[in-house]
Amino acid sequence: MDVLDDLLAGTRARGGVFNLTIMDPPWALEIVDEAALSLATMVRGSAWVRRDGIDPMLMSPGDVAVFTGPSPYVVGDALDTAAQLRIHPGGVCEPLPGAPVDYSARLGVRTWGGRVEGAAMVASGSYQLAGDVSRRLLTALPSVLVVPAADVAGTVMDMVIDEIQRDAPGQQSVLDRWLDLALITTLRAWFARPESQAPGWYQAQSDPVAGVALRMLHDNPAHPWSVVELADRVGVSRASLARRFTSLVGEAPMTYLTGWRLALAADLLRSTNSTVETVARQVGYANAFALSVAFKRVRGTTPTAHRRSSPLSAPEPAARRDGTHRR
Image (cartoon, rainbow, N blue to C red; front, side, top):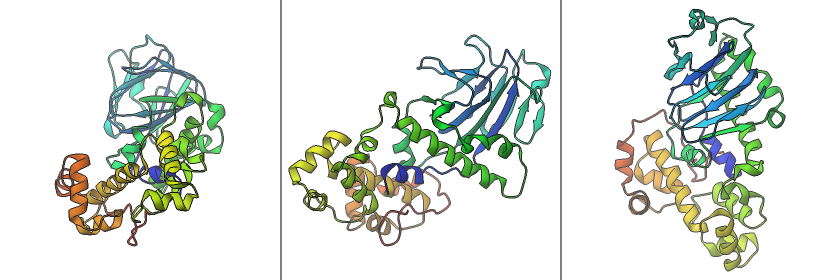
C-alpha cells in the first residue's frame, strides 16, 4: 500500500452533497457550504474561481477543481459578476437579489438553474471530513487547485451528469463512489504536475530507499520499527536511510512513524468504542500509558480528552485487529 492509498482510505465520501447548476451569462455562484473538501467540474462553458488569498483561476470545459477548507468562494463567468445563487450546507440553493426569478427552479434531481440548455453547467460534490488521516491529505493541498481536462478526461468525469440527475435505489452510494474515484483521478493528476509542489511523502514514494521504507511503515505501523531494522530491510546503512528519508520526506523515519501512528490512533479514538489500551496496541504502542505519553507530547492533550472533544461516529476502524493498517 502506498501513502496516497492510505490517506485516501481515510477520505471516503459518505452521504456526500451533490449539485448540478445550469446558468446563462452573466452568472456566478457563491459557495458557503463549509465543506472540508469539494470537487467541481465544468461540464459546459468556462468559469473563474475567486477565493480570498488566491489569484483568480480559470476553469475551461472539462477542467476539474478541488477546494479545501470551509471558507467561501465564488465561481462565475467573469471576475466582476455578482453572485446570483448561494449554495449553503446540505446543497440548499438560495437565489440572491438581482438573480433571474427562474434561477431558483429545480430542473431535476439535484439540479438547479434557469433552463436545461443554459450556457454553463457546473457539477460538484462535497465531503464532510473530520479525521486526522484525512487532515494529513488536506494539508498537502492548496486552497484551490485546477487540473486541465486533458489530464482527467475519461469515463470518470463523463458519467457525472447522468448519475447526479438519476434517482434510483442506492444512488447516494453510487454518487459517493463516483466522487471518491473522481477525487483520486484528479489528485493523482495534480501531484504529477510540476506546479503542484507535491509533499515530501508523495515524491519519496518513487525513491528506491525512502519509498520502500515509507511503504513498510504504512503497511504495518504497529510493528516495533527501528531505523536499524528499516535500513536492513531496505538494504542500506542506517545513516544512508536516515539521510535519504529525511531529505525527501522532510522528517526522520521515526518522527514520521510517530505522526502516522498518532493520526491513526486519533481516528480510532473518535470512530470506535475501543479502549485506549486496545487502540494503543493497534497502532504500535505497548500500552495505554505509552500512547498517552506520546499523545500528550506531540498533541498537547490526552487520548481520552481527544475522544471527548468529538462525538462518536459510526465505527470504522483504521487498523485491523492484528495491528496492521486496514487495506
